[in-house]
Image 1 (cartoon, one colour):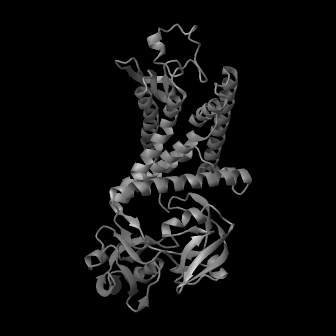
Image 2 (cartoon, helix red, strand yellow):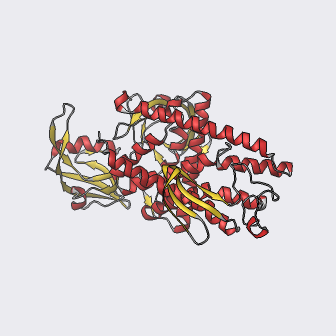
Image 3 (cartoon, rainbow, N blue to C red):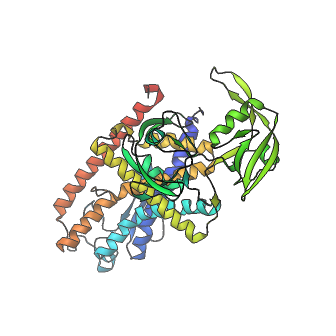
Length: 461
C-alpha cells in the first residue's frame, strides 16, 4: 500500500484543486455578466473576512477571503439573495440601474447564472479532450481474458473469448463503455449481450457486491462481473524498461512467455517476478504478425507477505486494455463531452441509490475527503492530479445545477417558475426558499464533514 502524503502536501494540493476551479466557476458568472452590461461590485475567492484584495477601474473589488470553500460574484443590485429594492427605493440613477442584475431580461439572468457550472463542465471537457488527443482512445472490444475467483459471470455461463456487446440492451462498443453499466450497481442482476463464435446470446448475471481498495487504502463499493479484461497489451513502459530495451513496442499483444500461453496481463507478474536477471522469450502479436523477443529481466525490490524485502524480476511494462487509436481534435472534444456526461450520469445514479437505500449515506464525502484525495493524486504525478481536478470540476458543475435554492440550480428553478407564471415569485417566497436551501446545504456540509472525520484512521475509519 502506498503511503499517504504529508499534511502540507495535502493542504497545498487541496488549494491547488479547489482554488482554480472556484475561480473559473465565478469567472463564468462574471464574464457573461459583463457581456450583458451588468456591473460586478465584488469578486471573491472564499467566504467571510477579506484577507487581501484590490479594486479595479470598473469598481469591482477582487478579493481573497478567509474560508476557501467556494466563492461568489456580487453583481450590482444584489442587496440580498433573492432580489433588489424597487426602482423607487434603490437611490440609483437610471444609468446605474441599467447595470444591475435584477433589471436584465430573464434569459440574460438565466445565462449569467448558468455560466458558472457550465464553465466548470467545459473545463473538465477540455482536460479530458486533451488527454484523448494526446493518448488516443481505447478501441478494444470487451473481450473476456480470464475470470476472477468465484466469478459470477463464469457461473452464469460466460466463457473465455466471449465479447460483451451490450448490457441491459445498451450497446457496448469498447471496454471503456462497461464501467458505467457495472460499477455503480453492486448486487444487481444485469443482462449481458454476448457475441460468441459469431452468435449473439443473452445471459443474466448477478453482479458481485465487492469492496475494493486503491493503493492508499481508500475503499469503495462496486458491482463486479468477476471478469479479467486486462488483455496482455503493452500500454507503456516504466523507466529503464527491460521490455523496451528488448524490442517490444506500445500496442504489442503478448501471447506467450517462454512456453506459457498468456491470455491476461495478470498472468505476467507470476511468470516474471521469480526470474530476476534471467533472459526470457516474449512472444507478441504486432500488426498481425508473430514476433519473438529475448528479454533480459531487470531487478527490483518488493515486500513479501511477511514484510520482508525481496528481489523480483521486472519486465517494465504498463498494462494496456487493447488497441489505442489516435484521435483528431474534433473527436477528442466529442469524447470529452461523452466522458463528462457519463461521469454525471454515474453521480445521478449514486445519489438515487442513497435515497433508495441501495447505498449508505456514509459513502458521501466532503471537503476533508476531497483534500485527502487531492494530496494522494498529487503524489502520483501531474496526469493523475489533473484528471482528479477534472472529476472535481464535474462534481462542482453537477452540485451547482441541483435545483436547491441558494445554488445556481435553485435560481434557474426560480426563473423556470417565472417563465411559466409570466411574473417573478414574490420576494418573500424567494427569501424563505433560499433560507431553507442554504440551511439544507449547510446541514449537508456538516454531515459530510462528520462523515469525513469519522473515516480518518485516527477514528478507526
